[in-house]
Length: 103
Image (tube, rainbow, N blue to C red; front, side, top):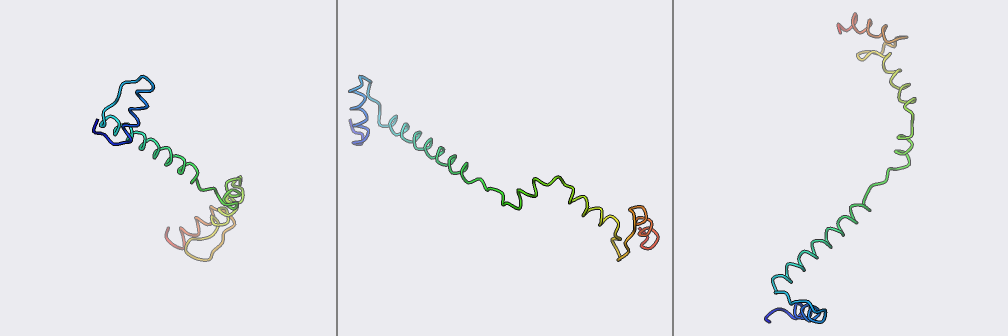
């Protein structure tokens, strides 16, 4: 057999287990497949552990029920987009922007 010492040892193990020997090409293919499989498992392990955890501020923002956001939006709805006019209600703001700014 002209293979490397490693595949010779592999075939010796095969012989001891009463299995037929394999060719050097088959051995190389088995080794390559094993290496690819091991690299994929390593990649998967690293990918899984590399998940970015949200900061405490982000967690609090996700837990928010949106009430604070609604209050902030309401204040902006009553303010004119083009000047400092502040209306009491949305309809008043729209009327102001329509008449004063030709919106």
